[in-house]
Length: 331
Ligand code: HEM
Image 1 (cartoon, rainbow, N blue to C red):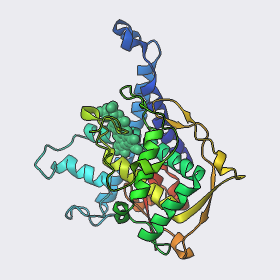
Image 2 (image 1 turned 60 degrees about the vertical axis):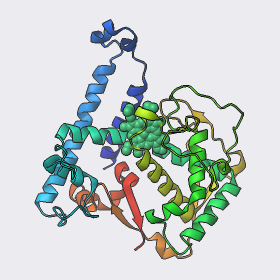
Image 3 (image 1 turned 135 degrees about the horizontal axis):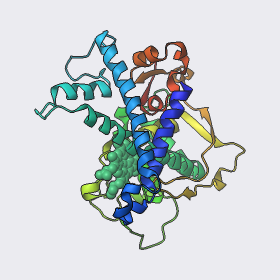
Image 4 (image 1 turned 180 degrees about the vertical axis):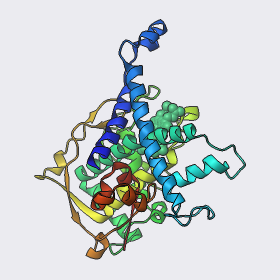
């Protein structure tokens, strides 16, 4: 399991690094066939490894379906179908509007786009937002109060609560303003100094900033033709993760000194926190039983995981894709 996890992470991290690497062939196309920096050769190796990974996941899913592990396959588009099952159905039947079926190559390309485009962008944004809230306790308290009112301390955060969390949404917007996940968009700079973390900029009913890139002075997901195709998903994943973390736990730095927490960035194609955030969570919900989670895996079902790793069921949540897509539900 650990080997599979680290291999998956290694592929994705290296793919992102290669995508960002300046390639001399882009400036002198005549040199492209020599692949002087080995970028094409390395990319092909990674693409093959990702392909094998996808083949394994897809083959297992198909085998499970064949053996009836998920009895709901074939029902109307239902909540128990995982994302891969849905894509595989599009591959066979086409979409609901009569669109042409997917090919297997398109299906894998979509998975690759989602993993490469959506993993670090979302997790880095959550890390920055948590760091800023820990550094600014008044922001953390306000977000916690909002969650207490909307969700309640005797309840678990659910996706349906997301619409009623305007302050946490403002925290996320402000995080993306100050620490844009992908900083290399068209060049732009603020017309006044606004370096402090202040979610109030985005709070209030008259807040006019959205994420669709229509206002060119706020476009954390890009804008126009090249706008991020994962905007809606990224928005929900980041907000849901933040809400769950803030609602369920108090957060402290190891050794204290929250007010001096370093939030500086390491520049790259993906902006990440220079020093990883290391924090200590303390449960804050009133009912300890709420922390005995029943995990329901959306993208890869638990049955699939059990089947694939029969001897290591206890480690099921250690696979990064499961952690990212797992939904936490109360018992
Ligand atoms: C906080 C989360 C995210 C942020 C801030 C973000 C931001 C961005 C930005 C700024 C771009 C570049 C737009 C441009 O070239 O002008 C982009 C591109 C892209 N994003 Fe995201 N993204 C996020 C999450 C996601 C997710 C969840 C997915 C997939 C499910 C995704 C998939 C992609 C893809 C495939 C592209 C390349 C599009 C193209 O080149 O045409 N992103 N993203």
